[in-house]
Length: 155
Image 1 (cartoon, rainbow, N blue to C red):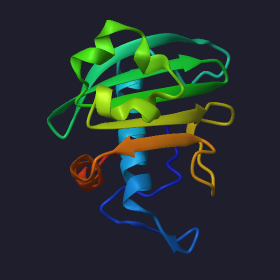
Image 2 (image 1 turned 120 degrees about the vertical axis):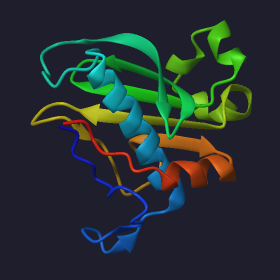
Image 3 (image 1 turned 60 degrees about the vertical axis):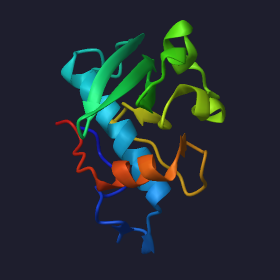
Image 4 (image 1 turned 180 degrees about the horizontal axis):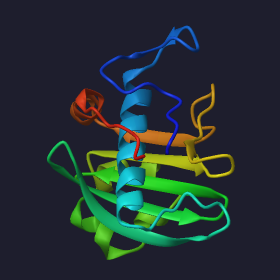
């Protein structure tokens, strides 16, 4: 099970930390967790930390909108997701790039990058400082849309 460090939206608060969760962070969490859930459903991502996760790109939907996901790694797995990907994404292996968020306007409405830890159970890596364990770039409409989604971690 993915253990979310951020509670599902629309409850934009985190009682464990005693502070509000920003819309940006909630949108990031929902897009990364949706992509990870799809990877688990497809059998690409396994909870077993001893098995390497082959770099894989796959389409999925969130709230009826098209998205594209990518996973790959060893003990920690990188998860990249693009909401409403543009045709430019398919012209190269751009989704695997760690600086994908820097070029969001070319690739989609929103982009999220995160890390899943697998030792001790599958869990979304988070940190107090932005950018430590993930990145997000998205326009206001995409951010609001992603925040409105109820994305539950895959069990």
